[in-house]
Length: 264
Image (cartoon, rainbow, N blue to C red; front, side, top):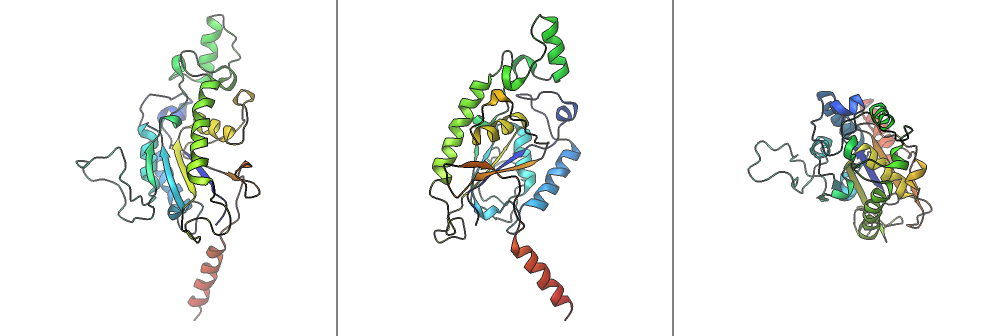
């Protein structure tokens, strides 16, 4: 298995994400197209021979917002753990009966979206126009300036750094090498999955590699998008952003075996 990884997944499309409106605490459903795209992502990237291996998930963190929780449901990871937002009276639960992971699910305030304060529901041009009308510098940048009545970059950094320390201490430390992971000698899963929001996940990726948010991490994560974080040189002291991984050899071998069987 590869070194421990963190998969960061932004919730699917909403009406406000389509319009570029800053969505923090406002609860919005996914659009129909957003739901379909998340389902397609799950089918393409989740599986024993895919990027996200359910059996190798050690833990799942999800935002308190419903749009992130619905996204986790639609990925269809095959969670044994009941979704915490469901209860025994929840009718027609969409939770899969095909159990593929024992990872526990935590609703985690640390990965709630950046608190936009007075900027909630506004687009960036609207925010800049409002600031200009009130005599504030119009060249607003959330990474540098934070949000009026909301969070500063320092406050976001503090909560994310605490979560990163937890992930490394609980799930990644000592989980390196060819014998690590769910198929290793100890059989201990070592990947973590996070389902949250655009700004907070871009900030998380920046803090993962120790980048100061005020410098603007210049990262993009589209609605429903998936990113991967890991380590260099098999060392927990060298966190890195995984730009791309190699294809799993098993996929090629199975494909070749299938073609050979068809020819018989």
